[in-house]
Length: 181
Image 1 (cartoon, one colour):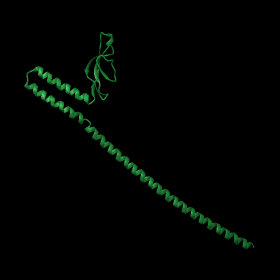
Image 2 (cartoon, rainbow, N blue to C red):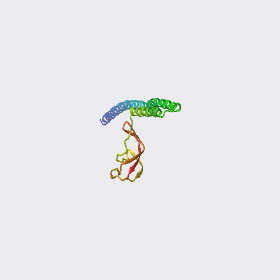
Image 3 (tube, helix red, strand yellow):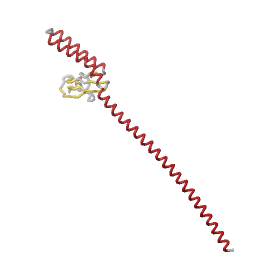
Image 4 (cartoon, rainbow, N blue to C red):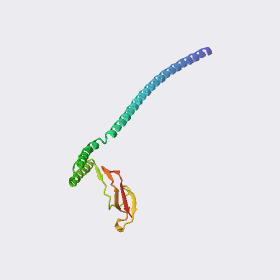
C-alpha cells in the first residue's frame, strides 16, 4: 500500500509539474506577446516623435527663411515712395542751375520738402512735438541744460537740436533737446 501511495504521489507530482510547466509556458507566451506589443507600440511612438520633430524642424527653417525675406523687403515700399521725392529733388537741382529767380527756386524746394513730409506721414512717420513740453527721458535725449529766466520753463524743453520721430506710435529716433534749469 505504501508503494501504491508513493506511486500516486509521484503521479500527482508529475501532473503538477506538467501543469506548472504548461502554465509557465503559457505565461511565457503571454509575456512574449505582451513584449512584442510593447515593442510595436514603442516603435510607433518613436515614428510619431521623429515625424513631429522633422515637422517642427521644417517649420523653424521655413519661418527663418520668411523672416529673412521680410527683413530684406520690408523697406521696399517706403523706398519706392521716396524715389518720387528723389526725382523731384533732381528736377529742383537742375532748375537751380538753370534759373536765377530765387523766389521760384524757393517755391520749388518748398514743394519738394512738402512732398517728402507728406510721404513720410502717409507711411506712419510723425514728428515729435518737443519745444515747451516737459522733459521726458522716454522721448527726449538731453544734450545740455541751460539756465532760464522764466520759472515755467524749468524742466521743460527750451530748444530742439535734432527732431524726434515715431513710426506708428513707436519711437524710431529720440529728440535731442536742450532743457531749462
